[in-house]
Image 1 (cartoon, one colour):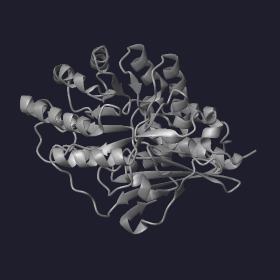
Image 2: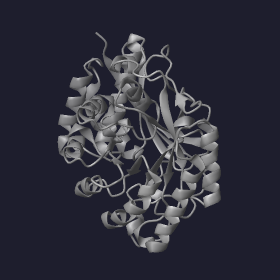
Image 3: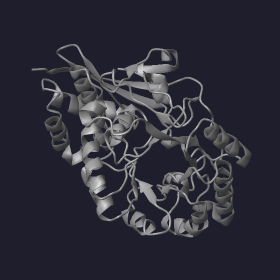
Image 4: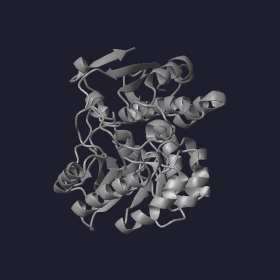
Length: 390
């Protein structure tokens, strides 16, 4: 019987070049405060955590987390690693429940669940390597020839710059583009006009045969969104993402009864959190991130629940842990995709820490059936730009 013998965590802090933030780059939950400075600062991820789970056979599974890596490392090292060492990785359901129930008083959302996610993803990668199969084959196999992806790097900028970037996405073959809003309630009617100008400008470039997604990143509130929806409806967006903060479930439910489908779930956790969202009809698209929601074990349960409600799942942020779930589930129609680019918000750090992520071509990507596990490895190519803490 295979046993887990070691759990190793490392925090990777980026010290290389960073693209500086521009004004009105993206709305966010801090915008309602009067504070001066960089309101987007706490939503940038210039650190990442890797979690390696080693078996007595020598095989190592790799998991990861992007939220508060220093705290997640302490949670794994001090609480979760001892719960899985000595156990059989193929008892993944038992191990998930063990981690969840032993830390229920403090770990069921946020930092604790992010830590569980990192360990769980590593266990699934390990199981794939031990069986010689890619993770998506362990989850149910291929449900689509290739994964359609949408272009997701389009943050708010000057109109001409946004149109150039949107055109580049069209030229690269993407059939869908997501754009961020840069203005929110504190910017008043003038900000509304700026939001509309940019959304209209992107729609003008991509045309009407491609999907347009619009994201607020929790930077609006219920009243502001109510006022914006009628103005945005004529642009036929596929969805409006995270218009209000994650805890305002009633706000989500009210908005989702309107003319534009509402998406969310990036900041929700576990099967029970998504049961609430779905029972309340609060979202038309579920957007968990596997390295937050509870890992692959929890994500598969949410996929089944969402399918029973006939609500599609489009995981947040691309990345390999999400692609494998998207490939293995017919109810996951498309995947988010950030192309490789200079370090900005932090999602792109995945490309600097790991190697093996498939490139998008003509708006699609594929997973290699010959690569076991998640198909990624920790890279040393950019090591000089990181400070790594054991």
